[in-house]
Image (tube, rainbow, N blue to C red; front, side, top):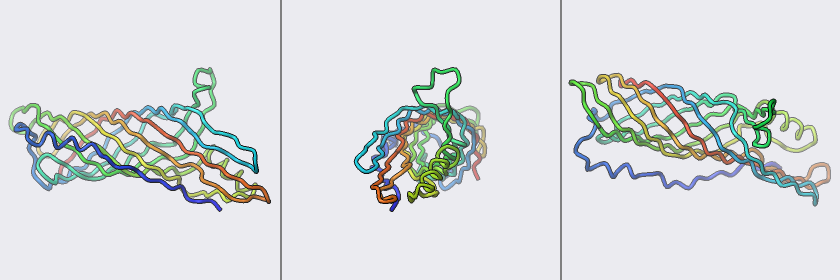
Length: 246
């Protein structure tokens, strides 16, 4: 039978933010303030799909590189200040209908675009604000340092869904459920606080993501069948956004 993909993450989460705790010139905020932020992201992927397919004694290794063919994502987050200048919360990124082009076809005039599903990330976020400059009474420019860790969810459609349907028609127990994964990475940016309620931000995030696409090992019509496949993704986000403190 198909086994759900086993995914774990080794969490060593960039707590160098604490190195700034002794800095006297820090951004001032009211402890406990809840901040909601939203904005678009522009992202680039450098990824590898690896795994293997085995039918009886015939084994085919899977290994190819790709780059994303969709570039825009939406970002929504909620954070709250837990101690001075340190904010903790959660975020949701929608990376849209996720499509890619293999490295072999990237230089062709009409490359084949592969669509594998709708990609969503749900993360825990930590951010540290370091005040760089103040303007008048309410305005300030802050350095933003942060990190995120969480779950990736890929809802199959397009080419991946067709492959799942084909496997099911052949008798394999390929699930239609969302593919799981995890994402982790740091971010750095600038934040302009206009007043106590409104702020604008620009940030660059560097993420490592792993998606588990197939984990099948069973007997199909009297033949041992195994299919394992995962995607390892290095992603760079460039984001702008607006924040509102409640």
